[in-house]
Image (cartoon, rainbow, N blue to C red):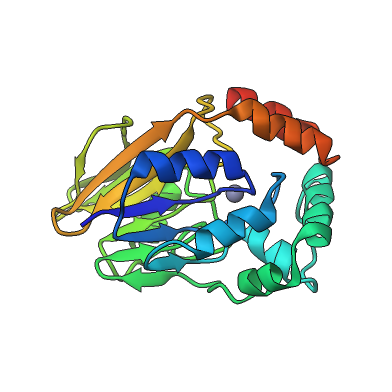
Length: 244
Ligand code: ZN
């Protein structure tokens, strides 16, 4: 069984299409949130995700900010706010409602907890350090968690006899998950931030208990040009070229 795990698509349709093609046929899709925000194609991305087989999708902070018109967006920086306003104006009512009703709490699919930011703070916490990962391991009901939000393809491991530590994950490598406590991030489809502009995702095999992080090239220029043509902040176009 193959499950495509993806996150942080950020309205980048070109990257999403490349990921779906590279992943090939899958039995299910688990989406960890942030379908929209930053990019030029929010409607097409929401509609493409909604059409995926056996979809399980949680809300990201951008999804909530854009779909929940009562949400205070002052926590976002000025350019992100401009992007939120553009996305609110351009998202269809049907797609807005879909995002509005996505779960804003972690979802458990034994033996995995699915969250956007972290298991203990679904929408907002970034798991970037072993200390933050460790605090989450102590609150998890499952031995695995898949999270997004940081836009970094990374993982952390908890072991009873040593400190929680970051593990190295190379695209294409297969990681065995059996009997291990792990928090794993598939990376970002639509706005990678690890200086590798290729779209990131992972394949999870629940039968073999394996995780395989992957990267795929896509036509970054197309998304870059669409962001500029839409009048969205140019910073959100430029960063895609180098993955920052
Ligand atoms: Zn994001």
